[in-house]
Figure: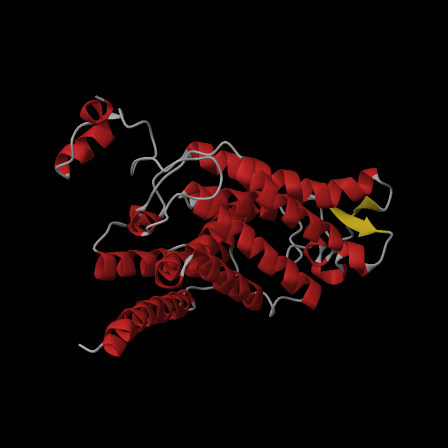
Length: 325
């Protein structure tokens, strides 16, 4: 093999893997939607299942590519369970969302008013919250799962973050009332969520951030990415122009959200995370993320954890007690 071929082969291989991921995801989404169209519409379970199609397709495409190309289980995409990272992410996402909706109310430039139309019933609201959680998880698996992580290995961490964040913004261009400001903010959010994965090694952290943000905006009566979700009987009314309020798209199209997403980066670097090192991060030579957290073992826990000790023996590695001797 010539030197040119040796340089091109890894690039072509990476393109093939990523193209497979995208094709499988789109095909699985189309198949699931086609199946659901057979079911009579008009009820909450049907609507919930129909909206879950992209999330289910994302899980399947991640699983297939991890097994087919990397010979790894799905959890190695960054899904080793961490309630700490999930809850920390939800709290952070909710806090910054409150900054852009409650802050203006306290500052007197916005107010909560009762809606003309009724809010969702308790059962429907619970179903919508479950959908918001599933949608957040699905979007993170689509963009910060195999796609981001394989790109990190192929082209480097920074280019992978830039590419997937740009794609995140493009995918929201079709939302109602989308603007250049909302697209810029969405790209900024995508970068922050990618860094959240990179620093934690856990998809549960960006999933939590994404869900916390997506939950608080509808609870406050604000549009979510241009969509009206009447979880409560109130809506957020602004007394300032769309530069601040985001207009019909909602706060995500305004300057306050730009500030909030910029602050996300600072918080992500300071958050007391539970650090994991999943497959793709282990395969990178510079797998230690920015910040002061060293990479831990596969389970993301103390090396004396029995599961970690068992994995070390399985892999033919010396025990942690020998390492410390």
